Amino acid sequence: MAGNEAAVLIAVVAGVIGIGVIAQVLSDRFQIPSIVFLIAAGILLGPEVTGLLNPESFGTPALSAIVGLSVAIIVFEGAFHLRIDEIREAPKTAFRLVTVGALIALVGTGLAVHYLLGVGWLVSFLVGSLLIATGPTVIAPILDVVPVRDRVGIALDTEGIVNDVTAAITAVVIFEVITTGASGPSALVTLFAERLGYGLLVGIAVAGLLYYALQYVDLSPGNAPRNARLLVLAGALVAYAAANYLASEAGVAAVAVAGILLGNADVPYEDEIAAFKGDVTLIVLSFVFITLAALLKFSALLELGVAGVGVVVVVALVLRPLLVFVSSAGDRFTQEEKLFMSFVGPRGIIPASVATLFAIELRSDAVGMPAAADVLVGTVFLTILLTVVFEAGLARQIAEKLNVIPMRVIIVGGGSVGRELATRLEDRGENVVIVEKEQERIEEARNAGFAVHHGDGSDTEVLKSAGADNAKIIVAATGDDDANLLISQLSQSKFSPDRVIARTNNPENVDAFEELGVRTIAPAMATAQAMDDYIERPSMASWMQGIGESGDVQEIEVTADPLIGQSIKELGPQLPEGCLIGLVSREEETFVPEADFTLQRGDRVTFIGRKESVREAMKWAHPEE
Image (cartoon, rainbow, N blue to C red; front, side, top):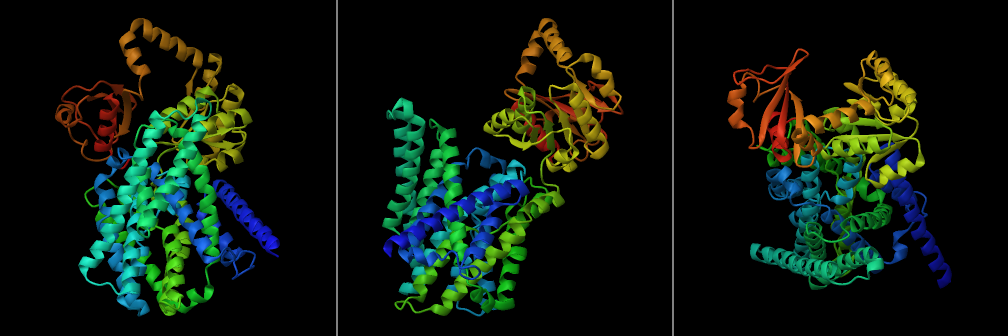
């Protein structure tokens, strides 16, 4: 009998992981965050529908341990990718989201639960503390399919990772007050500081040990990358377990701290570690979301009734926009970006896992608060369910409606030319999709980290499925002139890109492309021009070769202040050091402007200079880009 139970349990675990992988494939195929499919799978497999998956078969202690270790891996992986230097893209907003924003979410949700559901203050604020968290488990899948600008992604990532820690520790503190009777501000502060302190100490210690081992310990040269990956995984689990042993839920803080410190240190095999952690995270994320969704009881949701939906409406449509607009005030986010962040804040794994564990204890004979357990689990899961379905599920549509996705560029041809162009564009933060039909090139492009759409770029349906309807630029970069000409014709006639650019391998074919109004680059002519530049203009040619690395040249259209109506002489002192205006285009004429030349709406200005200075000038002159 025991053997049969073990076999069933193994089959369940294998099935859940398999479904998780399928969910990820569906996510990539339909550009919908994977968590939507994972939650749907958990509900369908759970006791409320088919009954194929019953998480209780794991046993409460075992399920608690599995969920806890899975959360440790997920939080560590998210923190590992958070770069301190990137937070400078939106430092004020990121800081406010995890302080003022978190406080607004806590207090507002607590008030909504208390007055709408009629429960006590402590239980109301317990729910509020858990619903602070958005978390990397829900934000990362959204950002995978909605490539927003860096400043938006960094703000959401930072909020998710830090507020996971805040939510977990705050919830534990309030829960201990409920179950032990501790009271008073000093007791609350002490409990919070104790858990955060243990998490910081353990996280710093583990990060230091891992850094030392990766930098200075011989990891066996032949297997060093593999050993480095396993060492980091073990370190994350040890950090979580050690901190949790010292104080409950301090482990979340420990893995977050360790992940941030190690991710921002210059460690060997960083790419291999990141890729490995991503694969492991995918598996544990699938298991945890499906398993916890299977715990959902429809009766708990129905008991909340309209008041429960009212709480979710307040959380998602009142508090979320309020905290986003307060947090981003005075920062360089556009109105559309603020709205996107307001409408995309689904709740994730921390609220679900912690609420489940708390509910088990609240229902126990020792505590005896089953009604509070039902409100806790029902409100948290209803919020997760509705925000995931409507906010995560519609995230891409919301982003497209608000126009917060950067310029989409489709490059047909994943050879050396296509990949080099994609590298340069992605370095500037553009949203690039490569279309390629040869499997070997597809693998090369994907291994280089590019988004690749498999298919023949001369097929209208392939271009459409790659996103040509929303593309601003389509580049035909294959090695076949006939294919490039057909791609250019289809792009011009079937879609509405701002520009179509084509590669012509035979200079004699340039006229055929030009007749279509297609910008054409002939490799032979470009190579000859580059060689001539090195002969006649060696300094300029050397500098141009480093564009995108040390120097940069960028062009923008003048659409708003601070450029309209100002002369080049007036703008000079306002530009970042190491940057100048090199060219201006007006009515099909391009020239070097004189000092007294005054800019008008519709002019195109070219900035030239150091890479950092040019990028800073772009943000200053055209903040909506």
